[in-house]
Image 1 (tube, rainbow, N blue to C red):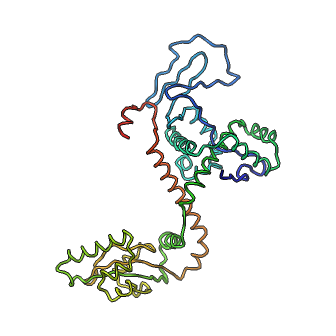
Image 2 (image 1 turned 135 degrees about the vertical axis):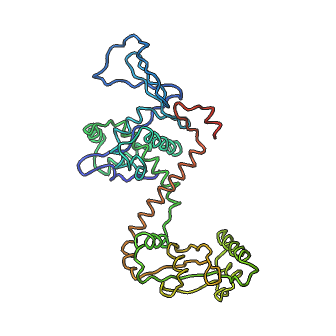
Image 3 (image 1 turned 30 degrees about the horizontal axis):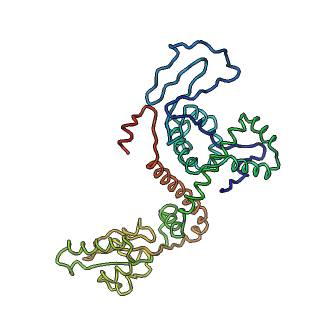
Length: 371
């Protein structure tokens, strides 16, 4: 199992803890009993019909029976459920989630506080999709906690007392470690292999974002495909050839091969190699196309001086290369975080497509017909 960094679980002076407690496992369509606090325990009273609250829109009813409040069902996710108490528990532990949940950063519940019940419910639904796909056994959780204890030279009693001092139960902590491990497994097995940040990605970010307004000393390494309008019966015919060239490039044919086959420019025999130019050496129409063009990408076809052009930006350099080198690691980290979040969103969307997710108050028949 992918290891969790134990240092993330302890602050210099006190223990910090992971995420919300496990969701109660009861059958969909039932309501789960929530016991009152010990100080509020009273002898059972006869059931009073008038005590049952009316259902609220979009949620299963809350019932009060023999002095016990029955939980409200919010949603089901395959064989698991989200209850009203899970939303309350999330709020109780939200500050700990902000510090320690490996997938919380960048989500709506991280950016916006306080959160609505609906926002928390969606977060918990996504969390269930992860824990269902990456289950973690009790033995694995015990191993993680033992590693934490060993690395920080504490025993189980010390851990339990520290949790108690902060107002948390060990059972909650145990389940929070399980959820964190599930998320780390998702990251290690499904997400990280798909995240790769190249030097080209870093340059594109630098020149299009961090250094966007600084054009001093920029030079562009270009390839070109170009056809003369005079070589064709009409403009439409010339554009048909160029549009077909664009399609071939997007379908994977090397730019160089397309240039040799299509272009009637002098550079065609060299695969469209045009060389390196500064902005002062280029036509205004070229400058316009290159303003937002990213390294490794091609421009849209454009006309200039009786010809149609496609440009490919092979590389971009500037007099500010020292600044780029200083920012490279920071940019790589930013891009990696963004791509991680993107890949996680894609994974969650795929799981939602193949999972049965039902919201309280929703028609099951209607929902199935929309799948």
